[in-house]
Length: 119
Image (cartoon, rainbow, N blue to C red):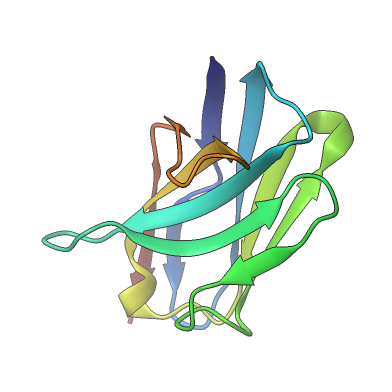
């Protein structure tokens, strides 16, 4: 079992920045990928960014490339999502998730943190 706890959401004006954190505990290892997803009201959950724990390779959705940065702190078992140049369309509940590299689907999910961007 892996437990994930997100923090850092809030209300920000368009053009502003927020940094989300996701602390992982439990049976974690270096053979994991951690990702951020988001779900806006009335929309399906969508992928935002992911990082391979070992090596740090990253991937991003086209909609956030150049604005969001995913990173990790190995010592603290924490993943961050730095979000700059925020837009109203970034408003959503943001979830972090983790999967073993051998799995296609994410296996464990956090409870989510609300991000609201005002215009």
